Amino acid sequence: MNKGILTVGIILLSVIALVLINVLTNYSTGSELDYYLVKETTDAAMEDAIDISYLRTCGVYRLDKEKFVESFLYRFVDSVDTTRGYTIGFYDINEVPPKVSVKVDSLTALTFKANTGNGEEDIEGNISTSYDAILESKYLTDLPTEEGMQSKTSDACKAVKG
Image (cartoon, rainbow, N blue to C red; front, side, top):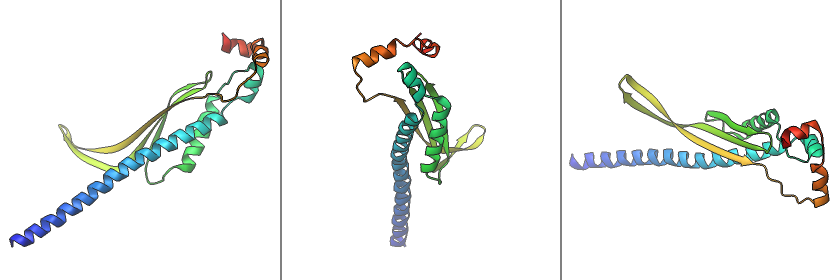
């Protein structure tokens, strides 16, 4: 009888260990995949949302907010895992200089039952990924071109240089 209970205990502990390892692996790889998904999507959406006509007129990079959000959502939905639920938040979008802050929360398969004073409550395991991006130019410009751009007197340019 003693060896039978010991065998059942070992099998039960191994099943619990496998479930725990599976949940933790899902959580850690999900976090890493979400980070790179948000990073690549944000960088690509920022490049899509640059206002080229404003750059030619004033010589300053400007980000179109609506175009950025639209491009981000289309790219994110196209690349996302459909087995989890996502909540996307845009916390800071600056047009000039181009800067965005994005936060993505994804629900995992991890759910806890917590006993609070009001009864039992479900607590879901969320993976929260925040990413801040600033658009930087890798291109060098020559001094006469920069001076020519700074001397522009358009009303739209004055509002930005202000």
